[in-house]
Length: 188
Length: 171
Image (cartoon, rainbow over all chains, first blue to last red):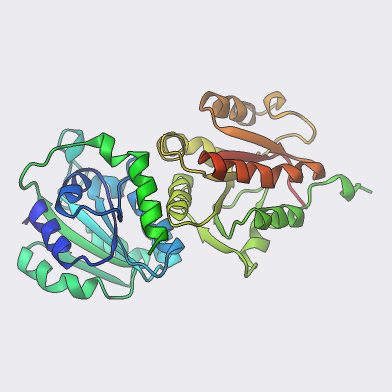
């Protein structure tokens, strides 16, 4: 099991000019760990992060898009796996921060916690590549290569809460930051 | 013999959609629009159709495309619209995303206002949109095609969603 902030710091260290779409706890931490106008957190409703990411990936096939999804979120929009696999964006890396709980909503366990194979679901939905990481060294060694591989790629990251970060939902959904994102992407 | 000149033409709708700069169609099949609108779109090399499994995905995909500088149209049935209310609330309205939707009113009687339909589901669509303060237009007769481009342009100018209700199967 990896501490989530440590796991995200590994990704941040290997980030170059990737767009990162993040939801809930991962988003709260990511904005501090890897600040950038190319962070997109304006997902608006639970489960929708990967769908926003798909739209961005299809709209800008020249840019690599990483989505930091949650397991509770993904369960709310499982059809997204089929939609993404069918659309087959080569520039999309779908990372799942699997913590087994609805952490933002009281840390209640997800149904069938520990029994679901999310990479299995992704693979059967049609993702050509899936990975699973539960220790930082393996993740650190693989992430640079994964960020360059053809997608869609599914990456199952087994995480638990690490250091606490301040929550700021207003910042997550602030339209001004979304406009900054649009401008930054348009200028790339 | 039926007078087809009085019927909405799918080809005119597609022309209007393209005129509004839309190149991405995000869609789930709908009995009102599948045959003459969605199927030709799937075969149209100027359009990229993204097939989805659930309509709320489509609200978000269109928003992601907007963030990436692209225009998109979400094609679905009114049942899917009703199923997507939270995404319309959080993603389209609160997120100020110009999600343009073309929505088939399954089973609406020709020439009857949606609010006067025999079908409860059809009757409540416009009141629900009004309650959510989402702009909407009824597209049912050939002249209604003129509403399409201005509706889409207004959505992008205001960065707010719009719903075009397809009141009768186009030919």
